Image (spheres, rainbow, N blue to C red):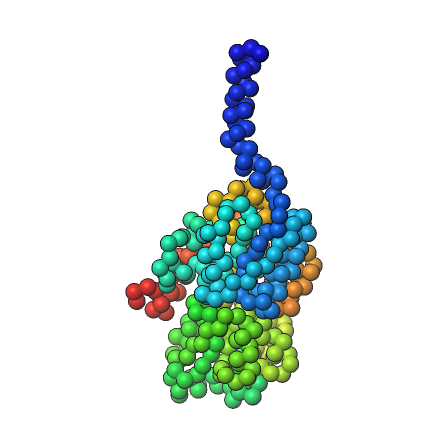
Length: 323
């Protein structure tokens, strides 16, 4: 072998050594099941819709995508789980909006922007406030009148402290000039049981309450989208009630920091295709949710912008650390 040929061979071998682990990981991914950690308990709208998405994505990837429920802590436990997971694509997590508030309310040793790789956004929620069917509150005006006459006595539940249902209700209460008593739950299933049984006077939640409303056990006082929900056409939006508030709390899927771009692309492509399957769209429709796709780049920019916006909300409600 000539000296020139030997040099070329040595350079090629050195380059192969440098890139082969990354390339091999990307080319062979996935070689085992992928775990998708979600922020709410089994049986609720998030769990049901994400299980359908995971089932679709698993078929596309050629390996199962297994749901791991980690409820509590305002929906932030899956994002925290990413901080101790290998950046190999085999652990991904739901990223609820509460993750972008965490740094303002809790002491954490990681950064939601720097320490999560944003894969894609998938959907958001349809929210509203419901009361038991036998409640004296027939309208939102009844609700506000009672709260004004009885400061701090009207109890409502949500799916956790610092979640979108909790904070949005507090923003609306502030605008309405009323004080409410908040009771946090870990998920929709427990929350609905509490309000249907009369343990709570009201609940702020995603439309996981739909089956209870349709069964005549709950009444919808308002919804939080830009337009009325087709399933509940008689329930006014917050905007119609005079509050300049729209909340749909977009959420998507993140991976640990340092996950190879090639692996992120494979995950992105599989979950995007899974979103387009009729089975997933139908599962969302059950809860008046809509596909809300954002690419990896767009979702990363959304995260950056939302961290700034949520700081304003947290400070306005007096919930920031040290306030």
